[in-house]
Amino acid sequence: ADLKNIKIYDTQSNIEERDAFTAYYDVETGKTMQPINEDITLYRPFAQLNLGTCYDDWAAAIKAGVEVAKTQIKVSNVYTTFSAFDDAVVGEPQEVTFALNAKPTDALSAMDAEWVYLALNYLLVGDKKNEKNLTDVEFVWANADGTKTNKPTTVFHNVPVQRNYRTNIIG
Image (tube, rainbow, N blue to C red; front, side, top):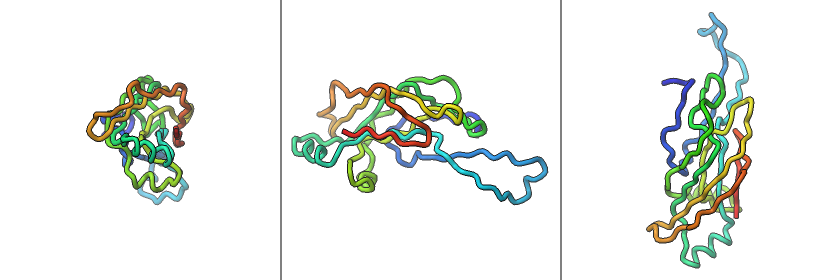
């Protein structure tokens, strides 16, 4: 309802359909009913952060009885509100914990023949004036019944993220 104050309420993890694109074009007064013949490029307002593992390590983990079914991340220095009119993040950066959820689909991993997706999240990290940022990422995984997890959790410090780009952590 308010394109100057788009809030991310749901911090559900690994939602591939959350990808979005935006652009703002200011129409001149009096020309709103006329066709517009302009090239307008859409950009993701998000940085995409992916965590994964190579297929050999995935197979070895399954053989050892560890099959990651759910993942979550906690990230620092990100935003939760965006203005499509200003093409800018709103407010102050904060820490956000994405909820534990099923890992991304196997179909997504099949598209990337080199590794298995364990987590995929879209982060608001900056705007057109400052598209880059550093974030700390805490990664948590659990198997389907929750009996196996990575405790202590895995933490990555100073991960570079950039709006309209992917950052992949694979290992």
